[in-house]
Amino acid sequence: MAGQISASGHEYFALRTFRQDGSAVSTPVWLAPAGGHLYAYTPVRSWKVRRIRRNPIVGVAPSNFSGEPQGQWQPGHARILPRSQLRIAKRAMTTKYGNKFRWFTIVTLIGRLRRHGGRAVGLEISLDSVQSPDRM
Image 1 (tube, rainbow, N blue to C red):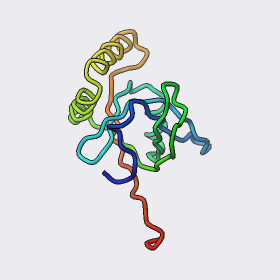
Image 2 (image 1 turned 60 degrees about the horizontal axis):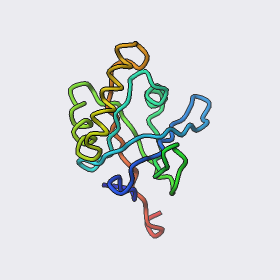
Image 3 (image 1 turned 30 degrees about the horizontal axis):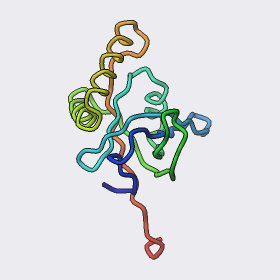
């Protein structure tokens, strides 16, 4: 995987997305690695999804439960997975988080039924490569 964050060593991550005015917003998320990318699972109506639709540039850092960064930010790009690829994100999340993720999917479903969060989507995050000083 490009970048320096190992998703397998941390439970929580801060995902930094950007508003239209360019200001950063940090949100706590779970991230799971698979196939050289990081994956998240979230309701489609969440603000982070809306911001990613407008601007796919993101930052990722290990964090505590509240989303306060506990390490350096790693820049990257995110994309919202098409429904046909949602299984990739769910499989990665289940592999890493197990029953915690299964409970999260139930909570997400209840939110969908109550029309708050909408259906779930997967986010695929590709971390930017870190260039060595001699390559800059």
